[in-house]
Image 1 (cartoon, rainbow, N blue to C red):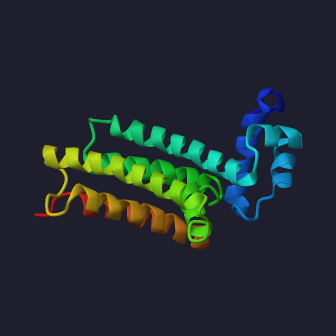
Image 2: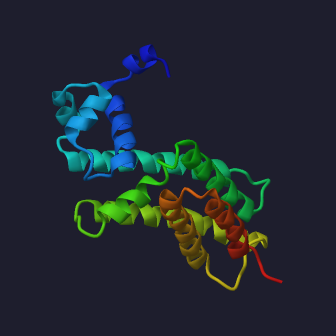
Image 3: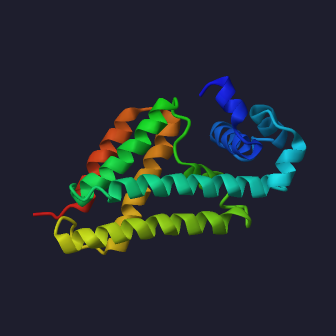
Length: 200
């Protein structure tokens, strides 16, 4: 994006982008409002007009991120020419490529906030729990449809499979944040297929 295009963005949009970038880089606690304002290049009054507080801003950035994830999931669910495992793997590869291209910075904002603030924050825990539950619900529906189609194993419930696959995805990003080893991402990609498909 050019400087002219950036200047044309609304203050709210610039704050969203700055917040996501800094939350990824420094975490919620490590990001100050002043740092967001400096990154976004907007006045403090604009921040408080749109969000009111740092907690409300963090919640808004998370909500926006969930919207992005929802679009990405929907893109792969729409690929009915693929098997269920291929749909999930395509989604995971998209997330992984974004992560690697960012220099191992932008993994999953839900996972990042979960490991940092969920244990101690009554503000963020219910939001994060609801967002994760919504994620699992979409995966469960996908796996249930796959079971009816015959390309998803039947010896586990769709809900159990969603739990395991989501744990694999989130766990792989947490590990790779530290190791920066793409082999972990590739290994989990293969294991997703093993978890989902019927066993002979």
